[in-house]
Image 1 (spheres, rainbow, N blue to C red):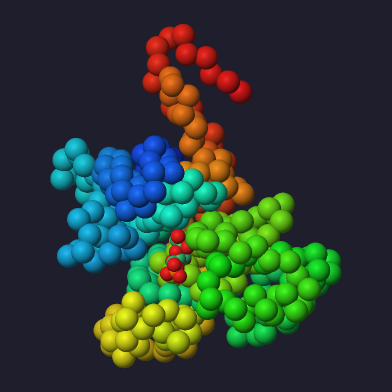
Image 2: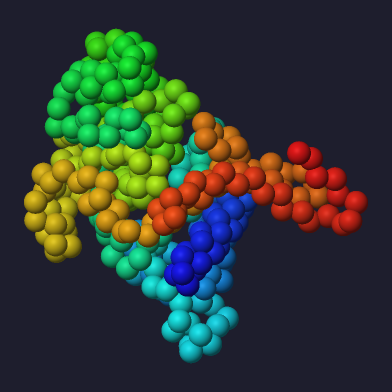
Length: 347
Ligand code: VTB
């Protein structure tokens, strides 16, 4: 009972963490400086994170210790201001953060930038390397109906069957990258519709798992860290992700000088204990935790969340907070009142 209470409260603490990051980055929306937008999100997230009553450890963050001053992998967070004795009683939590998912989106004021994190008991989130990952994400009705190694055509046929509709009635979401030419061609040939996005395959994956968003699957290669956070969301939403690590520059369609050679990455992966490079990761491999908490706040308007609104005497944020124990999904509309007693709050 005590743990259940602690988890519920932690989820609301993590809500505050995401709200703070979203507000600070939203202030920079459209300024065309993605690095700065990210920087303020990281600072705000880190500051509030430290007030959370937990013994937290970052497992997915802004990079390795020597390349990121804050929220680096392995950093211990939380429990600030409490005595060591009190801290000892706090739960041990692993955390994956993306303080600003879609830095470019925020920099140009485009849709679907979010501040997001996932948390779990120790070991509950895969310490994924910061490389690319091929993914397929679907919602609850299509769990078990897709296979990342199958053709796009077969996957679409199975999704359509589960959803009781024709393939033409499906919409696939995909990052607009040259590496996805084949997927895009195959979706078009199958007769389904497609939404190409410039960035943000994490919020796109979540949209694919929520009915009513008019997105039925996410396909293609994005970041591996985003894949882990997506998996945490899938555990809460009963959706499914299947994924494979990708490091071959040919497949990524990127300039070879921009990514480390495959040999170097393979060495790094082996050092991390990843032996099977072709492994298909499912939802549980990426987020094995039993007690998952997922929180996200809209920075700019999106398909699931509204962006931060500023109204002189305060701010309004829109978030989703989900937990697996108990299974709950809360959409939270918070008014952060800053003005005096005469401030009017609108419905
Ligand atoms: C991916 C995707 C992210 O950036 O990491 C992408 O997972 C980067 O891909 O959601 P490229 O290197 O091809 O640009 C995001 O889209 C975040 O904006």
